[in-house]
Amino acid sequence: MIKDYLGHTPFIIANKKDKCGVIIRSGTTVGFSLARVDFEFTTSDDFEVPVKEFLGDGDRDSLEAGKDYYIYITPFEGKEAGLIISIEKNIVGRLIGGFHTLCADVGEIAGHPLSGYKAGDILPNSIWCLNHRSAGLQDGMVYDPAQDEWVMIYMASGTGKDTASRFGAKTTNRRNWHEFNDDMAAVGCRLLSTDGFMTAMWGSPNEVNVENSENPITTGGHKATNGQRIISNIGVEDGVGCWDQWLSDRVLKDSCWYQQNGVHTFPLAGGNWTDVSAAGVLCWGSNNGSSFSFSYSSLGARGRCRCLHFAE
Image (cartoon, rainbow, N blue to C red; front, side, top):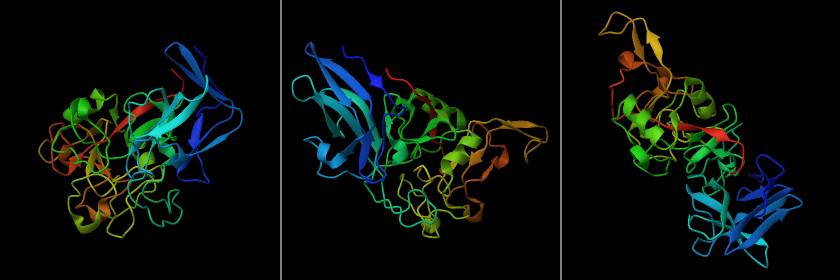
């Protein structure tokens, strides 16, 4: 078996000159065995990969919006390995990385890193590889360098082992803190912390809520009442003014309206579709004590995972 040599961490990065491309960095060697034959993929220099030219036979000619793509090394010529990039998870070869595509045009936002990005472009912070990846859920995740963790791009949908971060899915709500906590644990995640929420959502619009001030119901691609896309600097969708989000931190309130003595609570962050000026990155509170058992249609969650910096 060929031994991997990964000269850089991560060894797959965004191509700043091509929003639909990635770069496999110089000094990378990855291999796999198939039918007792060893195959090797090696780069001596940075290898710019125009993704559209490496899409699999079952994929469309261009990248689809709001989808996860996977990068494989596959048998090519002799003992060399080639690349295939696909939505499919059953490609023959070895999975070495992947990425998620933007679900909707960002538009022009002054000072925003994703300003001008179009639906189907690769989200730079979603690119993962063997030595830079999530310890749990990987699909629909972006990397937050401020916390060294991966964060769900979308509000959680599904429950239990079916919990996911998926574009266009119906957001899971009407679950209490314990239930959401269990959902995240089932896919190797935890609820966001207070500081993790702020860094992941930074760049989202403040003091505005989702357009029409109505329940968005499904995830991703929304605009605020000021016309700006609700997307953070790293690509997190619906972070503010859409749904309140449970956080993991335990706080102590001196009192609440129904209980005069101190009470342990969990904060809610971001604000929902009715909050208007109270919504934003720095918006968090403990509504009526934020009892563990509270569950509303306006209350959801998203998860985070620690980052792994080594290859299997």
